[in-house]
Length: 316
Length: 278
Image (tube, rainbow over all chains, first blue to last red):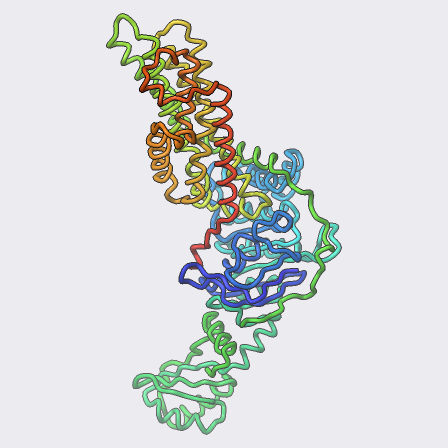
């Protein structure tokens, strides 16, 4: 349904997306990557706002850029906040529906239904400028889905929402992707986020993007398994790192190690639990004072970094 | 190379029922209505009110210096300079120039650009709104100025200026649409430069180049409708076109259509990079 073949997008001297080849079928998909990874550029290419510098983008079998046949089947909710001041959510959604080709009456009916669906029924006649960010986010979402698109693309849709609103909207978009109203096949939902748990909550397939490159794809479980095959680094601060290193090397959990400064030992391992036991045994046996022991790359950035290393085929 | 397949199942394109093909007219009118809604803010209404009374205030001030009453031809010339030229230009600078820049600033551009023919509708709808808004303000300004000038038989003059105002806004809004799409973030400066060089420099060069300006057509229409042609000194005749009124009006419409088509084509090919990403 959506295909990118060797797609590169360059803005002057900056590479937005670098040689990406990916295919998205029906159902929910998450596009995961830190800020600046190229997610928005990729979505811009999929939603026909940008033309690839190299490669080819196909959506529903056609090039999406300036293609009304494709664009009428796409709903897009961008990450940027809506700074429209005077319009109300009702006026805004009605306006977008008219732009999608609805008649005045159909737009009014459909806008009311969609605003109810996203939980903005009561606030739909207040100016957007007086609404909270979460409510504006709902208005944006309503605008994206009101015309019943076949492909819904959401860029950081849960950003700035409180946990309750986030839970509600996750349920809403999951329901949207799962229950097509009269459509023969499942609709396609693509959600870009820099938060793994957001994408996880959607029970979506994952594509991980970093530095403009697609570094991994699969289910959340597959990505986790993939991450676990790469040695992770554990940083141990103690008063005698060399003695600790000697003791830990005998345990078998450590794959490589290095020293940083006088008191820091960094160990790469695929078995963090076994390493922790080795370190505890060594510390007890040699009476070392361990000041700190932490996984260096458990953050999402760290996981992304490890996926990049895996993608490039280099060691930890 | 990054290769992946994130799809659970590939669906063929023909599995989905296509929504009805949207027409440009409906969406253009929707944009025009939405833009006029934006213009109905307190600030914009105040600005429009100032634009409407400014020429009348000038005419009143001039009238006070001529106790015997203003000469009709002088009053018409002044109102021509103030309304179809100045008020229309200023009104269009405010309403047409930010056609794209405003959308980018408000974060609404992306919402519109992903709609089928959204870009085209945005430009044409903004054009319609700019023409309607500026024409209304300028016709009101012309009517007030004619009354303030105290000339005899004011109604035919108001009708004459209404015609000139409509042609002025139709032509110049299209002229300003080009910098609005080529240089959206510098559209105001670019439009002022275009107005000065095209309308007030090239427009006064007695050569083929001034045939492509709105100012020549408006001047020629004024001369034609006021019956001034025979009275004009020879050197002034070079600054007006001898063709009949319908040719002048048609020339403005053709110029506007050509400029709008060019602006739409440019806008439909433009790409605005997501600044957060680069």
